[in-house]
Structure formats: structure tokens, C-alpha cells
Image: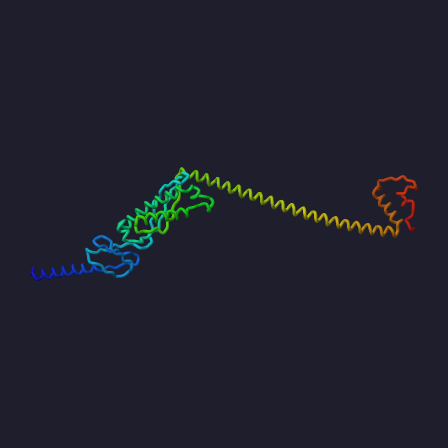
Length: 299
């Protein structure tokens, strides 16, 4: 091969290599990431604005990219112990974020290492939080006695305190439970306690119902007695009025013709003592039977 051709090819290769080396000066940053510029592998600068950026060419400067979005890490189901020695199985997830990418790279190296450390601290914080509370604070028929939110808040605070002290460059936004269950040995005691609580609630409702029924019956009896008393009083008043009016009418009629009324009263008396089968033997001087022997007064 002609030396001039070989020389031309070498020049083209060198020009291409030079172009690639010079192009390594430029790099792009996306909106959802940090770009950490490394000086021979050590973090020296963070670029957190999207766009086209510049650095020293390879191998002086390289770029490590770190996600700046909220990230989610799920723990595995782990068994813990409550303060009253009840076993529980809990699994949670943590929402976390990189706040200092240089610290993350210096202390941990990458996201996988960060999540491994996060898992350790979450497990420790959950164990401490569950160990400070009775079993009833986790499962209870009364929603006001359940302290799951307080426990998760305590875990979040504890984990953030540890990662800040160790300068991991991350922060936990929240921790939430995805699973809360119990070993088989604990389930029977849980069901027994739930049945007992339900029985107590039922007895309370039953007692309240009986008390309410007694109150209603007492009110009904009182209303009935008041209505009957008012009715009797009104009946007595009406009867008294009628008797007075009858007596007045009788007195007025009697004063007009006393003889007739005596005659009439004797007839009424005889109606009560004499029927169709009665046989009477009398003398004319018996006053009760005078209507048979004497004419009607006024005739």
C-alpha cells in the first residue's frame, strides 16, 4: 500500500480521536437528574439545571448522573415485637430523595448502596417504634386508639436523624405501612381479644337500649296516667253538672205538683219489686200500693 494512503488514514484516525476527545468537553443534563462532575473520580461540582454544559475533557473530568426525583423503596416483610411481647409482621415503603448528590457519591457510591443503608435504618427504627407500644396501639376496635400514623411519623423522624448524622446526602419524605399481619401463634389471641371487645360493645349497646326502653315506657305510663286522670276529672265534672241539673229539674217539677211525683215514684218502686209472676195480697191501707186503690192526683 502506498505510504501516502497509509499516512492519510492515520491522519483521519487521529482527527477523529481528537474530535471525540474534544467533544467530551460537552455534556447534557436532563430535568429529572443531577450531573456530578468528577475530577479523576472525585466529586467536585454539581450541575442541577437542565441543558448543555461544559467540563474538562476525558479522563480529567467524568460525569455521574443521580436521580433527583422522589424515589420509592419497599422493605421486605419482617417480624417485630411489641412492648407487651406480641409478635407482628410488618412491611413498609419509604419515599426518599437525594438532596446532596456529592455526599451520596462520597459516602455511599450509588443508589443501590443508599437503599441498602436505608433498609437497615428503616428496620431498626420500626423495631424501636413497635417495641415502645402495646399491641392494642396497632390493632383496635376503637379507631382513636390506633397509633399507626404516630408510629410512621416517629420512624420517619428517626431515619432522617440517622442519615443526616452520617451525611448520606438523602432525606426521607415519608414512611407508610403496606402490610401488617401476625404469626399464626398470635392470630388466635387477636381474634379472642376482638371477640371480647365486640361482646363488651354489644353489652353496652344492649344496656343502653334497655335503659332507653325503660325511659320510654316510664314516659308512656306517665302520659297515660295524666290522660286518664284528666279524663276522670272531666267525667266527674260533667257527671256532677248533670246531676245538679237533674236535681234542679226534679226540684222544679216536684214543687209544681208534689202529689204527682209521689205517685210516680211509687210506680217506679213497684216496677222494681213486682213482675208478671208476682201475686199480691194487700189491704187498701198499704202506702206503696195506693196507686191501685186511689185515683191519680188531680183527677
